[in-house]
Amino acid sequence: MQFSERASFCKNFLAKQLLTLMDEKKTNLAFSVDVTNCQSLLELADLIGPEICVLKTHIDILNDFTIDFTKKLVHLAKKHHFLIFEDRKFADIGNTVKQQYQGGMYRIADWADIVNAHSISGPGVIEALMYPGLTKQRGLLMLAEMSSKNNLTDAIYAQKTLEMAEQFPEFVIGFISQRKLSNNPNWIYFSPGIQLDPGKDELGQQYVTPHTAITHHQTDIIIVGRGILQADDPLAEAKKYREAGWKAYLSTN
Picture 1 (tube, rainbow, N blue to C red):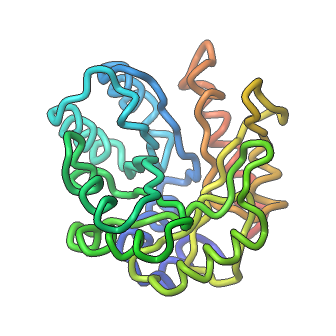
Picture 2 (tube, one colour; picture 1 turned 135 degrees about the vertical axis):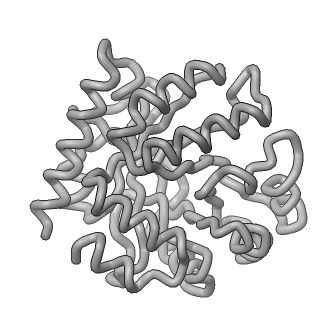
């Protein structure tokens, strides 16, 4: 199915919005902008924003974070028509997770369209995020698989994560995974560890190409970080990834 067709199967508003955005903007590229100061992040978001459907952040690595920064980031998301995904990876008991999501210095629920969580702590983590999240029309991704070498997310873990997500389709929009987990068209799959040339880094990150991720593993969105960040011309490189990801998607439809 095309993204526009799949949107009608989604019970979560944000999932519908994301699939529609991808279809209209003709991109399935997510940019992981892992820099350590706010100005650099905003400059990159403004530069790469026209090429992407999602901007992924790790807000706690910023050395100079302020709430004003998040307001500027939300403005850029509206300007360039992308969603913000805070890669927080919640993994605690429900009461703690709820406070981490809503409060503290980051107030993630106020500006991040999408967050994610490990399933290791059980369905309570979803329930804790769901109540504040749904009031703000947010969405949740579950971490079913990871791209690092020798990680513990085996096939059984992925299946249990899927089963957990199926209990909350109004809030869970999909998965961080290396492959498609279900034939249900409402789930959106974000694939990390993407580079134009396959390989690995010195800390165990394993890379696959956009073509492999989308056509062979049947995922939807390619997450690219260092492949763009470390390029001499990040915008030109982002355009290459966007083209490669969209070409792979078109070949499956």
